[in-house]
Image (cartoon, rainbow, N blue to C red; front, side, top):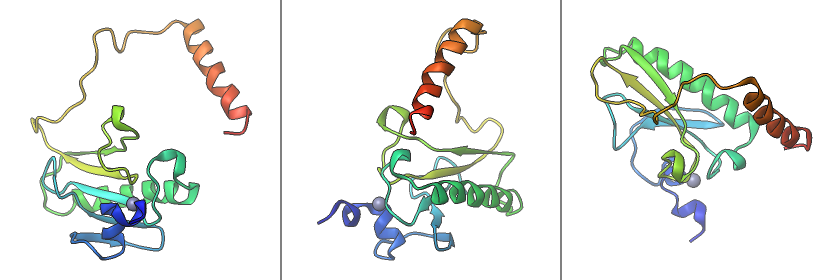
Length: 147
Ligand SMILES: [Zn+2]
């Protein structure tokens, strides 16, 4: 069994595993998260297997956001409780990714839904310009190298 056929999202895209589909085109498929954080929780996945952002092609990456935005608008008008939306993509185990076929969560939010991001102590304090410039330089060097 190849990794792609073992992948639950590839099996959904191929129509080989059950899912409640919401949208599909040549690049992406969207369906209800089977383990939702909230009613209406959707996933947008590239049709072509990519474990994470490094493997994802630019066209699919861009289109995932376009479709995610469109689905966010549909959720807001659907009658499903939705006071706000989080678009969330977890890349890597440390970031919370648990299925290694890249996916964008479209997560409807309601007041007091209990979902949230926990910030470590000290997060959000102003960073010094030198630290910001140093980090920016490190990233620019990688970009300049053609990444
Ligand atoms: Zn896959």
